[in-house]
Length: 303
Image (cartoon, rainbow, N blue to C red; front, side, top):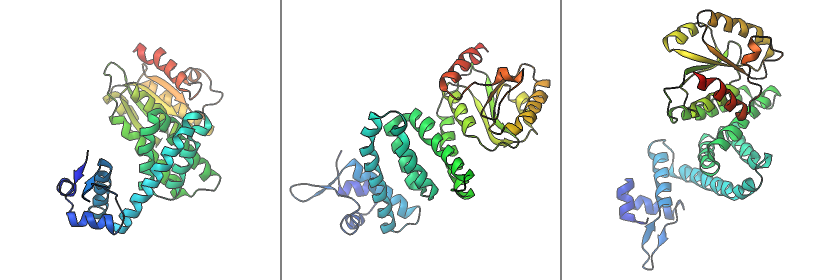
């Protein structure tokens, strides 16, 4: 659809003289010109003008700063579009490494708006599964590794982890809940701070329709029994990456099951190694979605 400058001004609440100035002085947009020289604005022009208005009116940027940000996002969009054929041609490691590196670079330099744009474009081009399970998950793993090896600061690790976590958790409210499925609780026990695997598994469950209460990392035991009883929790999911926490986690499970004998337990993560019975029966053998699906079909759908 095409809009005259008067229509654009009315719809966006931007004076026509301002729109002209943003075009001629700052080169922010390039409207189509009729043979008579009149401006016609495309949907993309309208989107860009709306972006500039938000940055200047709501976020306090100068127009030059807003235009610079707009140009950066446009360049990024073009780069991602150009890289898509290569990603389509190589569905393995090469398919998403470029996106991972670009996104990690943006986040590690605290370029939040650029990262948001990249993620939105990524979802539109590559879809939910690729972005969640291959891109965002890999970024979270990468910053954890970089921090452990001294190449990322604590601030960078916290920022990136929280950014990715919040983006993933936003999907919890999009998937409908199947009331026939048991309610579930997902947490990392006390002392366990790595939540990436738990988050992905919880997203898998939410996508299947399960109502999951997500408590996240380093969850204290206090109050869990009350949640299990009051919220009618039938399944508890625990993730562990540190084997040193395994024994105390088993003791925690034993205390929970004392008052909840019917509680279904599922354990995941590299922290569960050489697990004795009866706990071994609750460990998912891998982080493969195939294994997750098998567990869901065999255990959850039996409720």
